Length: 167
Image 1 (cartoon, rainbow, N blue to C red):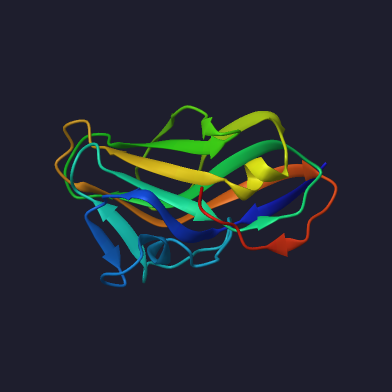
Image 2 (image 1 turned 180 degrees about the horizontal axis):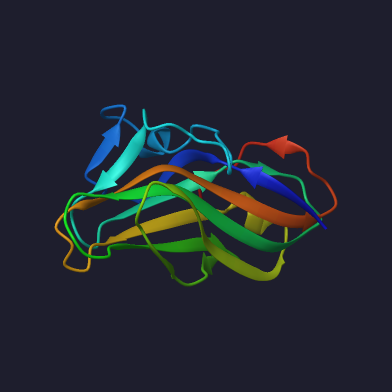
């Protein structure tokens, strides 16, 4: 088995987080610094949510693989202001559907291996890969901020980088 990182390359169907830096435009530009874990992506670009239950979805770069056996989402994130323990629900689109939320608690700034999914997927599933982030403030008075959101793919065969397309 081999692994390869993929990074955001487009906005998905739902884009509701409150703020993206740089201002305006595509939200994926706030989280695609290409600073793969464990490197520090810096804080110059980001997405931020101050509203409970808002969702952003992103498409990802892809590569050629014979079989995909796991995907792991890594987020560089932080909670800002307020008190309490806010969460971000993460979901992955593979195999013609969303695989099911995994929850991370945001806290101090840094990398969090947000969630792992295992299964058996094919090239078409990897090409359609999307990640959804759902802001869950849980009564917390501040916000969640994401600086980077990357996916580590475990696979066999292939590994030629190419662009992905939205579903």
